[in-house]
Length: 113
Length: 111
Image 1 (tube, each protein chain N blue to C red):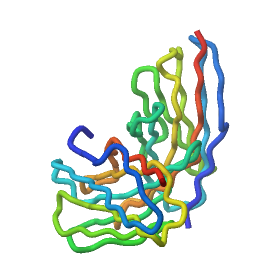
Image 2: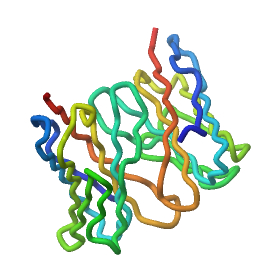
Image 3: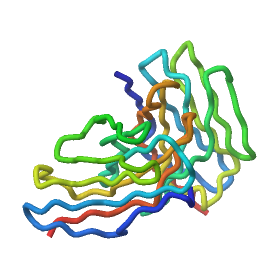
């Protein structure tokens, strides 16, 4: 079955720096890759997603890149702010059927003022 | 995701007791999901349902049961067979596509 590995598990940056979180997936049939942000004690919130027919997608300070050949995708956050501090989860799924999402283990991002 | 509600926010279970967690959505989404999250860990799929009266086991279904009698509702029962139920339980729903939206969660604690 599908497996998603996420690195690093923790990431500490200074305010204004960039942060990059990387995920690899095992099933080459996966074609949908969302990223969720979860603040302490809250629900995961979708921040950006990408489908396999696209190599890169941007939304203001957030971007996601996808390398289908290498089976990995990355989240890039530029000009980080303290409110970016949270746990970020990547996920992968195969469209159609029940659309099961397989999640990575999460990255705890700390942005220091 | 404001259209997905979960109750209660906190739930306490005694030894040998079955408890039921509620999940309701008014988004007219077809698919609904239950996840378990342990401290410092990712989300693991318990059960999922694509349509009314149909559901499938996820990766950690043992000790749990669900029903899907209405499109809007997908309750999860944690049975006495689940020996380590303490966790944060998240319900999600999705329209016909892939994007899943999460409810606020229920924190289950064992007395």
